[in-house]
Length: 106
Image (cartoon, rainbow, N blue to C red; front, side, top):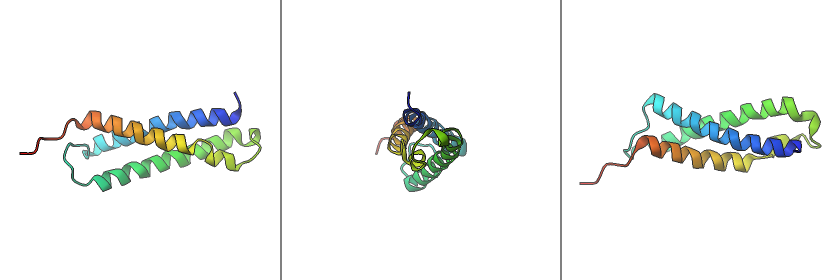
């Protein structure tokens, strides 16, 4: 497998791990609940954690793959789309499982 393919699949896995981190953070701080309040704050907390995981992964990938790719810019951009798509899909999935169904309107 080529180095850029390894980076792509690594970013897919890191997107899932970032979703687990975001869900775990939300569960640990008590913000995961079925009520509809403060959705923007919950999203910003999750997005901040996802960006942090992405930036940390960039420096780890840079240390390992810098000599193996033709353009160093590819280390930053390769897999960015699949990372954020997998993060948001799995974060919504994990969040929905933990939050449960919303209370019925009365």
